[in-house]
Length: 316
Image (cartoon, rainbow, N blue to C red; front, side, top):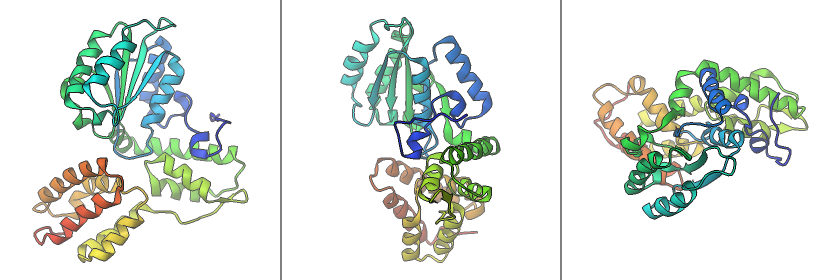
């Protein structure tokens, strides 16, 4: 049975996970979450992942909903200084919860926090441990100082989705089918499988595609953005060092951030060993630029321009 928020109309929000059972998550980790919730509290946690739509916010929102305790939410990209940590967090954390349970402080986009703010939080986790727990989300755990990271139970969604691809692919398929059935949509299972293949691991993009391509109660094939096919076309243009074609292929990417993981995961197949150090350095630099860019296509196009302009970078 899939949870439904009847106050929402957009499918991605209407079917946003409400319970642990709704989450696309390895069963062994779901069981750990259930144990925490059965005890009525969680440890301080960090939820990280670079690819949009894989469930960082959904996981945190489920924990908040099921814990049903006093919660403070902070946007780390806007409230990232040491004064916020000292004042806002201190005032909230230093009193007992109305329910007597641990309070929860959620810091979204924690990888934007200043180093001094992170250092303060490291101390706060221990100082307020009797009354408060902390939950962090972010794209890049390597931007979090090690003394703070070491105090968290960490979930790296990029790694989880890579290592549990088969299990999570089955969960996603069942969830998408449940959504289509709930919306009384006629569909062919092979189309659903093609959507999963195209957008994995971003469940949000899969659900958006299904909604956009449901017409008169029937799922149409639509213009599936087949990520592998797009990357294949992009690689051909890169190997031919055709800047205009590369830029056009980048523009066609629905989620350009996925390209960095694609090149990293397939680096041995794409580049000979002597070219890999240069490519890895570019991946590190431009993925960092992308995290701060408003238009995510631009830093990716810049990175690929660097690659195809460097005659020392070869392709397999």
